[in-house]
Image (cartoon, rainbow, N blue to C red; front, side, top):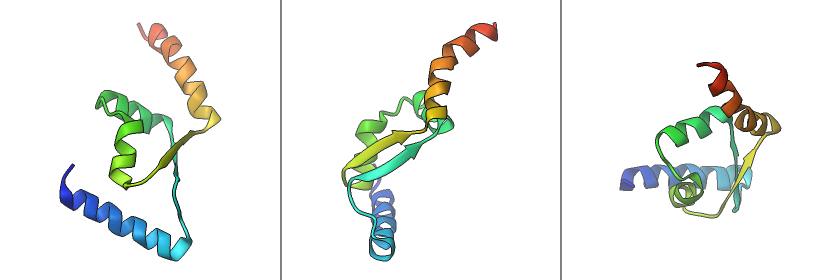
Length: 80
């Protein structure tokens, strides 16, 4: 990862840490479109997000995102 990207993330996390009391483990809410983009880009979110945020992370999804994951194969079959 580029150094400037890490510096920007560190700066922004420092702001939230000082002003809002955000602490590790960072809870990250994932939606369906973000997960699909990560799949297309072949990005391993469990590995990459802790590196990017330079700390421990906890990935969270909503029940709607979980429903989309279960219905995705059904939707692909219907589109043919």
